Length: 225
Image (cartoon, rainbow, N blue to C red; front, side, top):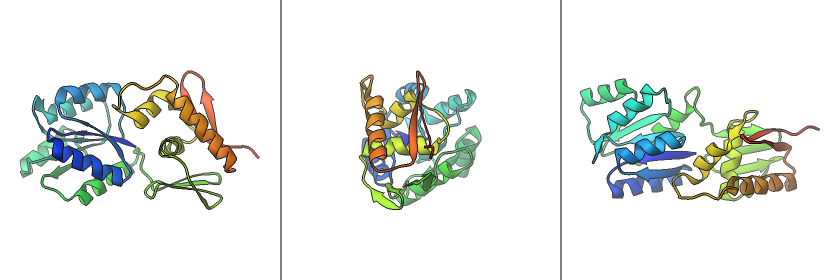
């Protein structure tokens, strides 16, 4: 899962990104409202961690625009504005949670995980289909209860497909979650990683299949027999 961190302090942003990585989240960092607006229009994130005091505007304006266009991405405000009125206003504008700086990083992760466990969101510790089980916190895959080793990108694709098992996951969504704002992505990068994952799962005896929905994306289902 990829999270967008909008924070104008590079030191704090790096600390948050490092901590999120240890907790199993990929993340992108942006330091301005303009850049955040563009990223949120063009990419889909699992969640947004949003500072309010940005150099080119108030983070609340970003939140307000998201909700006005019916974008339901979970938003956790992370700010130095700690008065009761500030918290009430942020939640009423559309934030899902509100955390005041300074903060304990463990609490930030716990709040983020709680947001993603809410109905309609995507977090669950154990994902299972047929004889494949994925522990999303420990980043471990078991096939027939035997621990298997997959690459980081293979794990990421497997997680995304298992979370939407039986439903199509678009190629664009896979690109967003795998590569984020890392720069230009090769036109067949997703296909290459999906091919590798398919081969791995077949070799390991996984009773699942990855179906290609031409022109749209991929869908994971249990294999027959």
